[in-house]
Amino acid sequence: MTEDRDEELAERVEEWLTRQMPIIQMHGGTSSVRKADPETGEVVIELGGGCAGCDVGDITAGNIEQELLTWEGIEEITVRVPESGESFGVDQAESVMGVDRTEGGRGDFKGGRW
Image (cartoon, rainbow, N blue to C red; front, side, top):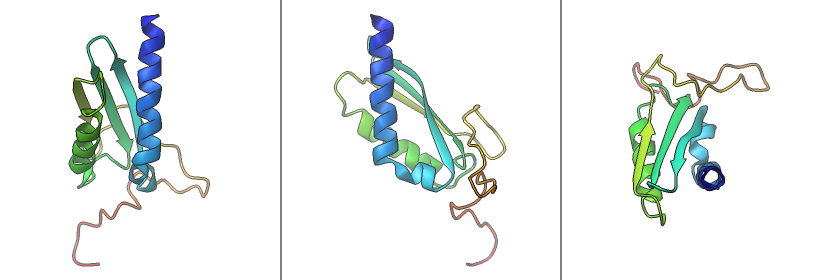
């Protein structure tokens, strides 16, 4: 029974991430709920793909944490954002165009002006 409740919470969080945080996927990132424990209220989310090393990754993580802490039954949120070149195993496959989106599409141009 506890496992069902864990899955239910994880599914609700995943659905919310997909619906309310489309910017993650739009910028080539991915998200995965690694833990959702309704008994303790702990939720752990890992970001990957284009989120690795993204300059606004911490802002995205903060927005996720801020929202989910308002949910009934959620007491603690951890959003892990990988550093550039690091991966938590939440990688995104190449797009249908065959372009590796892990470094593109999120405005990460570091040199000069646009």
